[in-house]
Image (tube, rainbow, N blue to C red; front, side, top):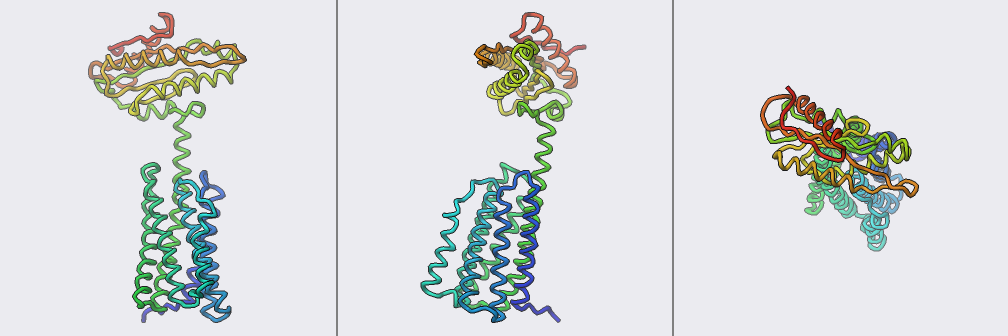
Length: 380
């Protein structure tokens, strides 16, 4: 014998799932590294649950018709508008002003009071389903279009749950429009929606966890002061053997200890930040830049000839010398010495070529600093 689904029982399960989802999302928001959108989303779940409670009580004839019909429609439409705004903020988009957000439910409320259409079950359900379908489709779009800016695995699953939920509402809307809707059909639809909203809450939690993991990974691989990669980051990205037609450079700020001693460590930090930003502006997107420690930086140039690599290194040296910083009205002198190793023949690990760049850096410093020294052979 099949399980008989009656609407009041399904609404009870549906609102229970919504409350559980709201509590789960709210808990995640308290520990999330990026909580934007989570609390509005939890609030949307609660509003939908309260709306389902009103509708359930109305089915049991506990509340006056005007109260539960108008009230459940208002809470449902507010809930789904807030749902869309929460997902939009969660995905990384700008927040929607509350005044704009209230236009849709306010419109339904005014139309409902003027025409009393919420007293008709099919018309009320139609208004709710239109709002829910539009909000869920919009939410799926928000999540999916940011997948390249933030390529986390949970995005696709979250967008999928949102689209399935939207499809269920759209299908029920079709039955409403063709006057083929039934109480049993609504019960089945809300039964499926219960699982969809549970899946949405689960994927929201998963997305938040993935963001936290990505943030920790970035922190482990990024220099906190300058924002460029650190030694661990660049070493994990250098090929085991540098290909012919690439170059690696060691950069060292000249007389950095004097800067710290004369102007203070805060001024030294400003120099490092300005230095890193200067290098970042001059380099290509494909180039690797990392702070190796102290005032020492590394640059890896893939797909570049020896002549072009030398030109880039000279440009870096010139650009750094043009950095203008002051401390207490006194100019801070900034320059850099660069040792450049151009990979002209195959063979040798990146460590060998890094050693060659170190030797070239020593030559640049011995020759007077603020210059580039180039080597085309790795040390034997």
